[in-house]
Image (cartoon, rainbow, N blue to C red; front, side, top):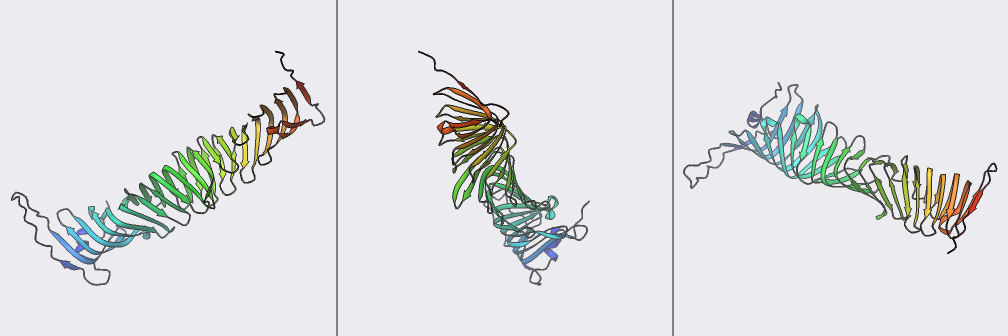
Length: 382
């Protein structure tokens, strides 16, 4: 069984104020007479000015300590209502939150502390600041529960949501509904419906679909849609899963794959899963079983079962490996190369090919041990 150093009722009678004086007791006003003679407000209140309230556990460790300009205690309900309060919330004797609010309420002998209006909660261990309008602190659960709009600020991240839970023991913030997060260092903004922020590990984890935008000098460079994301705010590396779709502004590419690693700073996408890249401007599509795309350098590397196709030129190339210089529109294919085109129709096979698929200008070569084979397909006579 858990014992407290003092009960809330005794606290209001025995605690000294923050300035070292005894709290000033104010007699409550006489109850208003109801026009209904059958009902009357019979609750009695004790009112104190400039009071300090605190509570400790059975080991003498502080649980919380709050100063208020005014506190009124209702004996029947055993509830203390506070005005203009500020204080500390503790865990294992250490301050985990510095709080302030316009109003508050203490219930159940200090097991629940309600906060309302102009709430600011700061975790001095990591510098996170939480702002909201309504919240409750549950000491037994080491939990700050926010049921209203929440804003959290940190040197690494600014995030807002409709609801939130801050687990002080883990230094973890769990957010729900209408989430908007902005990573300061990597210039990334994301929107989702559920997000977990593990502050000591410097990680964001999203388990519901996310819309992500990457900025460079206030200009969007990449837009992503993905089912799940694990973002390291320190290393700026993100692990993206469940059907990634990326739209790059420069170069103008569409990229689709099941999962990938995203180097946010370098704009490099790496995947061990089948990948599809579409050049919207040149109408070229490239696919492979694995791939790596450096969007800043505008180079893509694909391997295993690679196919490149120009829709405009009706030309295709197949190989084991392919390097695609997007800005120069240059393909370098290696390993079991097959190139085919129409108008005129022919097929060439070899060990290596280099050229521009968009211009049907491809040179196929061998490694010296195998010959290049070219098959010309004559047009059918009408």
